[in-house]
Amino acid sequence: MMLTLLLVPTSTVLGEGGTSSSDDPPTGSTFVAEIPSKSPPPAKTGDEDIEKVVDLIFKHQIDVEQLAKFMAKLDKYQYETMRQLFSERVGIVIEPVNVDNASVMGPLAVASWTYVETIENVWTWNYNPKIFASSSYRDDNCDADEHDVDYAFYYPVSTSPSTQGNLRWTTTNPQVYAAFQIAYGGNLSAFAYSWNEVRLCTGSRGTALAGGTSAIANSVFVHY
Image (cartoon, rainbow, N blue to C red):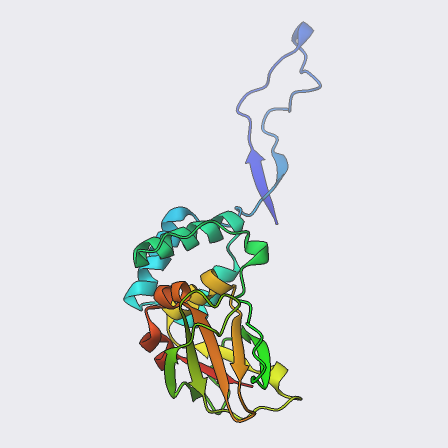
């Protein structure tokens, strides 16, 4: 897009000898100058914007879909800022991490498990059936560190060797979503003792960030 600027001089400027200078416009003429217009640069998300979103999360005034889009646009600095602000609101001090290698809780190999999977997050409300956890319990052996506190969430869902890699998790709770993105990069460890179930494993810190086991059990569902 070009903006047109009209310049109309009001007098003639004389050069040497009283003649009109070749560089000056004749009296009454109109100049047309083409000035390229530039769109303003997109506004960058600042710390204040991140603080507002964190506040909306804990007030449950932002839905998960909106939150997912907001977090997806954050750069490394902004992501770390949100991570720190979020954890401070919960009262947990966490060390900075390289967001390119967000920590995923590694599973502990147990011979009696049918399978071990890392389940990715996909936002959706249209997948059916939505299978929520029917129970949860403490299970300190469900991740790679058997000396810390962990929790398992039981889902009565049928799986098979051919479909287990297609399983995904979703939550309707913005605090849970933000917590699992911050703590695990959005990927949850899952395991099972049979093909008729799935159990998600969360650590004590991720569980606390999410608001506790009840918040997770009541809002996280699995689907294909």
